[in-house]
Length: 583
Image (cartoon, rainbow, N blue to C red; front, side, top):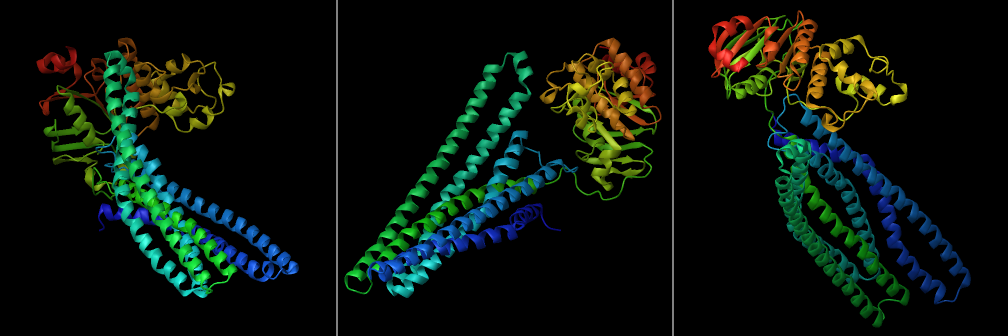
């Protein structure tokens, strides 16, 4: 089996090669353009020798027509070639963005470890764009080679010394340009790292803006971002300095190279080895060579930046999955029986637990870390350090993670709402209706027209229908990024409605009502019990209202099962439970 790193490189290679035909077409058209560009000085020299020097008006008119046709061909070949190259670059970047998003959304996880969301966004946008631009750079490099080759051939036919100068000097210039691009590559990678980190910090601060304001920590947040931004600016300036040095030195070398060609050509003309027209052609070709050689300098810079970005993209694509293995299909049908045997992971310390299929089980904890670890195990975001978790008698490690996600839904209390309507957040199918605008919304009941009964039941059970009725356009009202236009309790109700609407065989919810009032919490508890009747439901919470409607309650104390029974029984018989739930 290939390593993750090799797989990441393969995706990059396929992304660039996937546009090979389009880039090949652009390269062919570009070569035609470059050959034509190189031919123009030659034609001008011919015009001087055959028409101007001989004072032949007929030939002069004929050659002027030839030049006009040549310039029309040059214009169209450049336009079509550049268009094909740009399209190839953009499509390669698009392919990479899709690959990065697929990796980030992979059910096995792992791509987000150690990275802020803003960093991943930067990799998927800026780095993918730079890698895609390699297609255009390669195509432009082929153009430049064609132009230099055509110039060298003509110069060889005209004068062996001039041709040899071009043929021998060009590889030296390319080698020097490659050496000069190394510092730019290193500093470009550092620049992108700093920029991605700054983006991640900014996104993190914006997401926690309310909390920062509540704590009065705005100034500290500003200082944190200022430090990060300054570090990013310093890295960008270092990369810019490296690029300017690289460009300046390559231009200086190129200028010296062109001057050498002109000097040798002038001396050959003085001793009679070249005609006036050939000298003009040689000088014109020397000036033309400035374009391809500058292109090589640009190509070197683009490839240096592309290599730096490619390393960052490959790192994301090759990220080790958080969980490995698992190819078996989920049992069909899913009964929903969960079993934990000797599970150890952070909080849980050898937990043995049977969660009966078709029943509502409440799990109370004395340590929040235990709840978080348990949720990660049940959702298979991570595997336990020891022990096993089973679904209907099959270890989760044997099941396909994507199929497992559909069978066992873990609704975390800190899940986020997306920027869109309330209806679109509860059910993706409502998004198209939400885009139709408020004019097509039936405001009488506060829901979008055509809302399906399944969504209505989920909204009612979570009492999110009350939230919809309180909004200006009902369920079609936008909730803002992260649901910021809603209160904490409203967001929790919409999140719970989304989980209930999904209707998985096994639903695990974590503290779904911490921000709602006691009366609403009791009503939500009854709605949850009713809508999930007959299906496996696990509620990880210390809420008395939710635990009271559970068929069975388990207390996890010190990472182990401390007590089991109904809520009423545990309140009467277990002091630790009373402290955890009623204190």
